[in-house]
Image 1 (tube, one colour):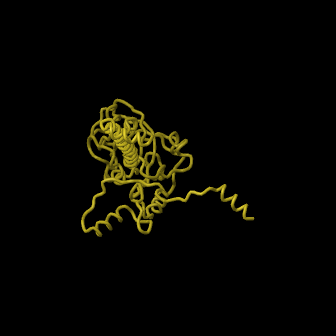
Image 2 (image 1 turned 45 degrees about the vertical axis):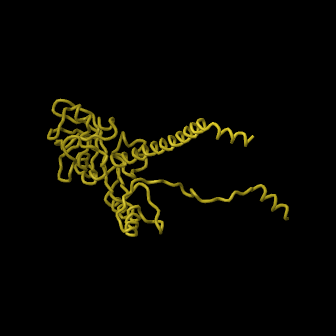
Image 3 (image 1 turned 90 degrees about the vertical axis):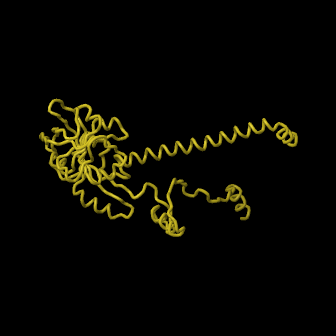
Length: 284
């Protein structure tokens, strides 16, 4: 039977070639599609990391369940000490604090409910590489009363760089407080819903508005998302790359990464546990 099948394969060369081409095309298509889907997830995660979330976020317990409604109840006191402790870790690239609030933004004619963040301008500009400034510029440390508004906020209130707005919020004691700001820029992130309600002001201004020295969130940006293996098990991708360039005597550019699961590729001996138990029992 096997000889007959083999003879038929070589006799029907056209059919055989078409079948092999279909198989190879299917395998290639599945491989390419799998790589494409995996790359989409990687790009989405990097876009989220470098637009809003960072690699890690530190909050008080309960912030995620109730902090959006009452962020003032989940403040991290003495955030500078916490930031310094985290920044001392070798893998950490940057640490920044945020203070969340909600309020009304007024352009002199219309009020718009917003969700706001008090941010450290320099660090946030370095983190937000996936945020696009469509008009104006990023906040800087010198912008004591500058505000960065989402694209949807700018459209709703007819704002542009240089426009003046008034921000009205409740302090921690429940009193109303307001402050005037100048729009420095308009941003667009990967989330349209976020852009429709989000604004960012300097952290010091947010703390003054709310009457607190605390923060809600400490955002941590790592040197890299995935740690690369090294000879000592601690080397980063950058260190491995430099060592390889030195050994090769030429510049090297990383074009892609391949992620391996722990233990992948290790030969594992197949054993029959039941047989081993029976053999051990028979020896007694």
